[in-house]
Length: 363
Image (cartoon, rainbow, N blue to C red; front, side, top):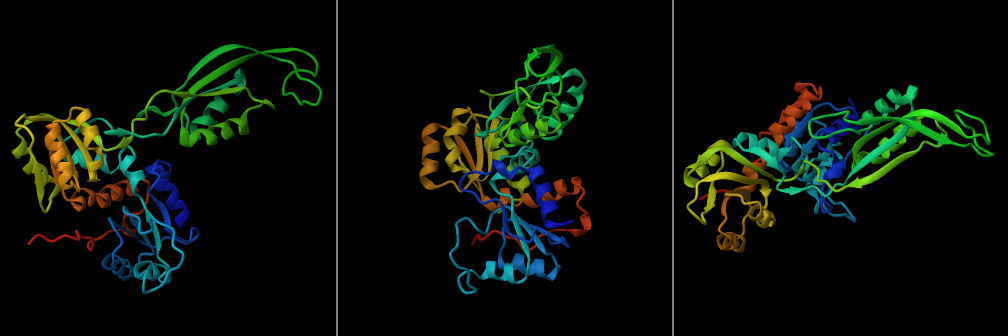
């Protein structure tokens, strides 16, 4: 397997299209034609993690947090020791950051399952657009066109694939001079029985679906429609969900700490109500405090809560459980490990880092 093949698998797990504008998920450093020997999975790339990769003869590291966020004008051993060592040791480096945060079955879903939170919706929906796509095809070619557009990504609604609605009708056209019609004669009006295939397409797949249709459609000029739908995708940042039964907040907080094996937690207790409706954002999610409150969450679980954000939570009457950034996102390794195995990546070339650790120490 080459690096570029693995990159395609990662894009299927969590499309890089989903990443936020500020992010730099995907390739950090890579020889796309290099054969993958071993893959080290880690939350971050640190000196210890890099040494671990070299010791295990891994030539590819996949991290959650990108090492490169901003363009570099120069790379030196003195100013960029980690990057310099990665390059000189020919270790490929890929990142799965906000694309993995937003994706269905991504990091937030994994942690929610650990905590027994049944997902209702994203805390903040993705900004990706969804389109209705319709194409008119001669009856005998309808199955061929359907297969092509489904393989290109059309027809996905939640956990269902190949969804469509097909309507029979009569198409008309008159070929003019300079055309090469599949059916009919130049200058003569033609009528033919056609099928209208109607389905949905996510923005990231639209160009591929249109091209796939054109590749197999018998007409010289296929007739098709594309229009935006005013619906939101089922993926996005964070999760809004419910736990099985109402729980007292202090007891639930300690249960969260135990399930996450967290170093510490900080509770911002704003009321005495029992908890049922829970919002979750792994890593640092203080910017989503208002969204959690607007969605009537009884408790918001996230990390990196600042002093003033905590005061705002008190003003809103929103309970917040602040878990260390590392302790929610360390599960990136286990989650991606399991998904890569499902994609057929041999277990014996996958290594879960033992050197990644929180930068904080409690005294």
